[in-house]
Length: 309
Image (cartoon, rainbow, N blue to C red; front, side, top):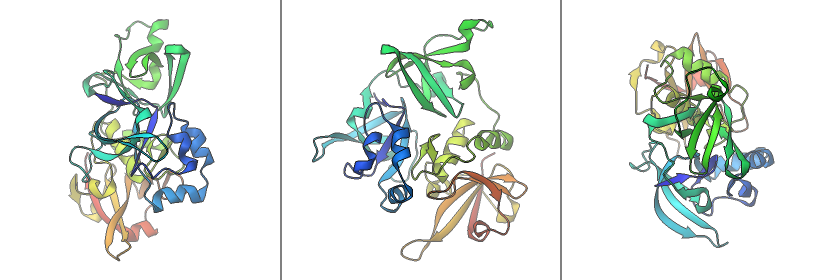
């Protein structure tokens, strides 16, 4: 089984899609925050306009390798599908290209039933071999290594996990253990989502280092056990259709704009919180926000509402 072997791997649209400025995002270990800090408004926008990045995948996420390729610079790449990210692009999972250095053959990829899930916005995986530590995203899923003591002693403050990088531990208060879960309610979604207020939008972002609109709602619903497709144009095909004026908290709102050919297409999604409030990752070079729907351009572009709760 192949797993992602870095904290956050980019799934690129081709081996030629990354630019020189993207080099920190391609190695192992990945230098994600260095990469994001180097991107200015224009280089961030280019990720979107030229459709270079497709999505992101978190540590120990299983992938299926379809093809190997060596680019003109001698770098090895793998074309993969990501089963945990549903997509109309491939029924097997979201397709794209990952540097081979960011994948590993390992038994550490966890099944959902045995997953320790990072529920904090960020958590440090510590105690890895060679005294390494790793900064992990919200919703990273790792395999529980040993039972967690129920007694309130020093050991219970740590949760030991087996990963593709070796054995390590996470703070107990940053994770959800197998068998635990959050209530599937609007209040839960709002509490989780508001922790990302002010986080800068990232095209194809699917980690708590940066989300795009559909990546944010995909992650929030996954945290309460509801698996949505990865992209907004696929998400709108799921859930219970609801009249626009009958929306309620916990619904997803979908918005449309003309594409290059002038056809109206779904290009944005937001979580409706009730009382005319919506939470979303707006657009390139903006930040995650909670705002009013009424009187905005979004109200005029609203085309569909879907219910899952």
